[in-house]
Image 1 (cartoon, helix red, strand yellow):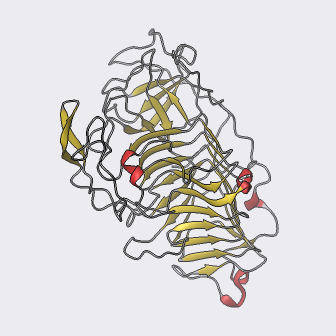
Image 2: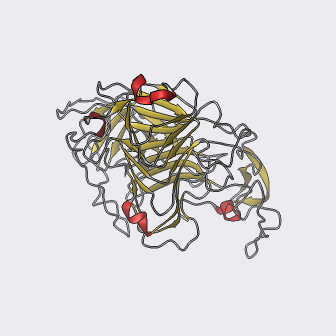
Length: 454
């Protein structure tokens, strides 16, 4: 899907045959009856593109033989090192092994012809700088980075199936806002139009998640669903946005004065993902098992020994000289279950230099180990992100001594425990929980009680 931007407004009027909510009293941001009033994300119009790194003069094309000197132009699937003291521009599809960017060099990815770009690599070492767009040049075209590598061939190298940064990484995708909102009216099973509390600039073809409003939310039984936008409609008075979906809702989603289901945007113009051929867990069955205890009239639980070998890509930003400015990016099939430090996005021992970095306006979904980990890093900003379907604690302060990091307006949904969920093991009682040991299938015992924020 190519994302386009136009200042014009197309108004579509809809007549609903299943039910009419045009005259209903919509729930708004001022009538949502929350005990705590959350700040609302403003709808911002991304600036016109200017000072785009990939349009600068003096860049050397990846595809020129002269760029590579005596080393020769890289062949498919080979390891490649960007020449020293060189800014290299990648504008078409390539598939490589490990890509190394020396401290004196920069790899810039972007299209001059508004076409999509696909980069596949088994790892990227960023000692210099990796650049996609800038704060004044948010990328509208599709750019996809696919990270390859299997658990069976796993290396301890931090760049294996990952992007390892000790220099600078800047990735600036198109700014959609707000990144998530709440329903303005209930959604019934079969409805293909939904109403949201906030005005959005979401687009046709994008994927959204309708977060469950059911009491139980686990791998073996939940009511979350991913849907695709087929049309952006003119909202009736009282609603911020109206979206038509390609298919009717599979489940009902509540919206009453006391509580309204969340709706998050998953799609972004820049996608960083694990390879579909070697990332997904192969041990997903059985999904549900009977536990030893009856809870709320049922014994069914997610099976403790299932979904433990997912092996997606990862991004690690490490050391006191590392800088990461990541916005408008979709991270999909990332994280490596029970592999320490292999998370979708991870600041590692950056210290107070975290003040130079941010992770904002992104989405993380189908994560096999956490969402955003902040380890030994202070003063970083984590804001306006959407996380859905993640294994283990999601937004994660790793040591618990991290200070002055700012977490604002982040959504965490459908978070899975590792192992038997806390309180369900044999011997659990109202005043007692048995010890939970660590091991290869549970390296952090706290993940038996995985939560959105930890």
